[in-house]
Image (cartoon, rainbow, N blue to C red):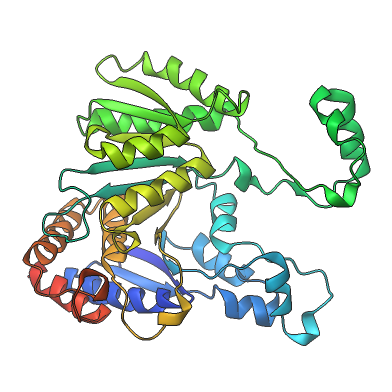
Length: 373
């Protein structure tokens, strides 16, 4: 009997390419696991009106964690046009599978390390070692949206908030409303995890990235809770930065920052900026972690134009596998994998096109696998 059962969801586009590369590395590591394939992605949206079928949810509930490749998402009108003819006009509405997984399994924490490895020609600096903690289930991603705005919602807002009065003569069909929802519990959770990580790995600061001077109630709640929690960690400084200023400071002085904590939307944005500082999305890994389950995915998209060409950089996927191994408690395997990744990057003999080379996705996988032995 194998030690682990891992849900295997390649998804769309280059998700299949990088998952194939990941399997080469995992096989060389000899992780004692069964990989259970699941259906997810754009083809299932078009054929079934559901990009994340219930049968796939069932698989995840029977496994220890999930490794996810990449997903294609398109705006509402475009997605509707691609439905099979027999499904058109039947009320199907596309929603992102990865967002649904975060909600379904209460994956409250999105962990995104952004570390510069020596020898990477795309590094902004070699001394960058950032870790972003992004709250993963609330904010604008909670999915509470309206268009057109229902009359009863408008009436309630007019009654309860004076600033809505400037919209009172706007036709309801001309108003779209997305709700930015924060809860105290989620704010406390993501901030505390940032501080616990800093404590565990001896990092001297946690920077909370929000915009409380303008978004006073939601960002304000995050900042107020952070100030309370920071008092429990006297050896770690709390820094507070507005998200727009944070983007500027990350470009100017990224090496002075360590652990960044933010809400869902701002965390999404700054983690992509951090990724570019260490070589781009080809090096950007992430973990969606809950109390009882976790989904691991590189943060790059499905890049349909490259699908099946084995052209893209798989390092983000390998670093994602490393996060998965850490989660499973396989610390020695995780460290071996990171060491192999670092050696391949530093030697620079095998590089994909984004790094100025001609190697394929699978060439990179085989080179990392060789360094594991």
